[in-house]
Length: 220
Image 1 (cartoon, one colour):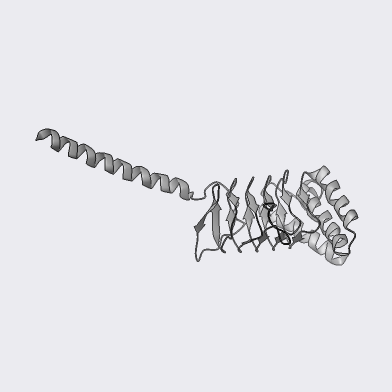
Image 2 (image 1 turned 45 degrees about the vertical axis):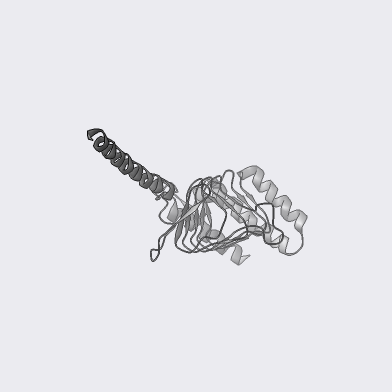
């Protein structure tokens, strides 16, 4: 019981540190659905581990009804998880989430429907999953990585990486720790856009060369 309250205090403090809109511990405890969802998940997970699976699932589905956040009681969640807003968040049965992670509304930590056993992702420590992002499959997202809003991640993500796009591509940030205190989901380099710009430059150069050749041909 003491550990339960210790974890709850840490969860509340994590929200106060990461969300500039949070004004007090009382407000976070009473009005933030992510806090309630994680708090009740810890109870449901305890029951799940002790083979009271029906009661555990009943708790998780009741919490889903009130918060819009669905966490399977089998999921393993680390310390200081912050689920911001939370509506539409889905966390699957074999998901493992490390410490100090942040998950935004509409994110899914799910399976592809093809696996058995370990079917859902493992998040390392200090991972951010942006709004509407989908992380699907039994692979690992390394420590200090960021999944951009709307990204669909289908394969392993190295530590200290940023994933963007559909399907997601990795923008490596070697040697630079990506901290979840940086909550910017917008100013993330998009490799697809960068590649399109490169292609546009090449096309412009080719068109210029063709025009020059055509001009020389007409002069002759």
